[in-house]
Length: 92
Image 1: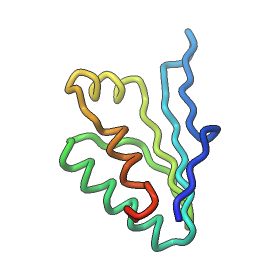
Image 2: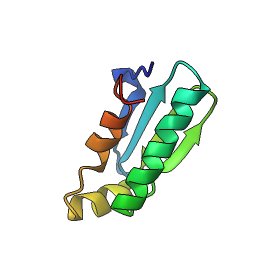
Image 3: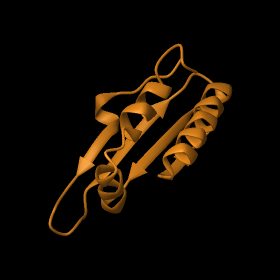
């Protein structure tokens, strides 16, 4: 089962740094993490947007930088909310 914590979502801004969203998704096992990655790949192809990913056996970290925010905003994309919905319990 996927578990996301509010503390795992970090939007950082400063004059020296561009805004970045880092969202960590934790899963109960490798199969759940892999299923999420596969669904995220489908969403990325459909939206033509590919965020930076880091992952391990039971977690995935998605990072969206300032350029990504601007690209998604200009298209009025629901990428972030759809990504979060993919990780909801029962979707994996």
